[in-house]
Amino acid sequence: MTSRERASLRGQAQTLSPVVYVGKNGISEAVVNALEQALACHELVKVRFESSKDQVKPLCLELEKLTQSTLVATTGFTGVFFLPNPDPSERRVFAD
Image (cartoon, rainbow, N blue to C red):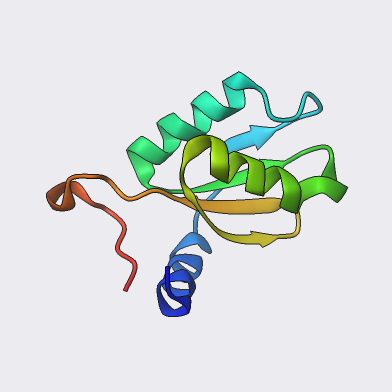
């Protein structure tokens, strides 16, 4: 992913609300499943970390691997993930 595409996705993510929340149990199978479902529906998803706030970046990198998505950005206690729809005609989010 180029820096231009990443910047475009970050801009689109600014207006989004977090859809997935990671609590005190950390990254569980339920969190991974919720993120996969959200990515399938929305393609661009914010994840909010309610605990383990000093571990946001490593947890985001782990979620990126588990869901095979792309980590677009981390800001504060929030990570933004992107996984384009495999069918180009059904894509909702475009990385310019």
